[in-house]
Figure 1 (tube, helix red, strand yellow):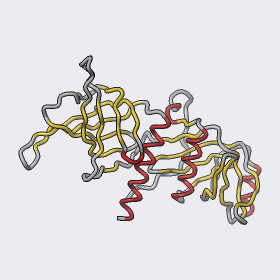
Figure 2: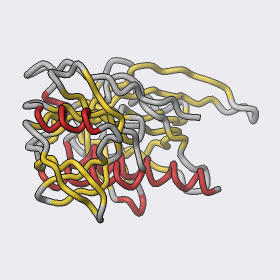
Figure 3: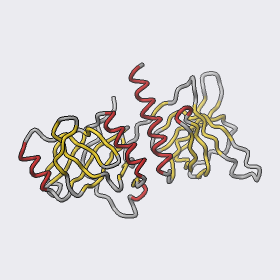
Figure 4: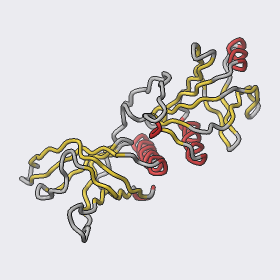
Length: 250
């Protein structure tokens, strides 16, 4: 069972946390639409972030988003009076947060709602915990790593054991020496099958050599994604979310 992400406000620092910020409208809308589909809990902070309500994201389009109102009229009044609102939710074990100047009273499909203008930016705060998805044995994923030492740059296809928003677990034959702890590998291509593919940099954080029951020696490496761009992050999240849903159905 997955742990619930605490819906507490993250204190964000300009520069340091820019890597978690999404500014592309299509990517922001994709994240919010998936929060609608997943029915994720939302904390809406108001009154200088001293109070909050737990609510639901009802709908999203290019103009903005609609949130379910509180059952308490006084809370609704104070939210409408607030000049700063902080939206905190989660998607695929990654915290989502953005700020809005003000809410307006509205209706959505006949029910009372808050309307917030479409955010200019949104933070996907994935620096703490990641849901690690074990990849299917029947359809293994590969991480294709270019040869860093050769001018011919012959790529090496390495099997992915697990994958998350933060990195990948790789396994390869013991004689493969390209995986070195502390070293980064650029332009690594990961094919997520029907979801698509992306290219990024991985850094090997740890490496162990183990023997399998049939006597084979293999190397297993824990790798971290470095400076993954927004489009690749969204693609990866889409794959992990889809696979989680498949496992639940099974």
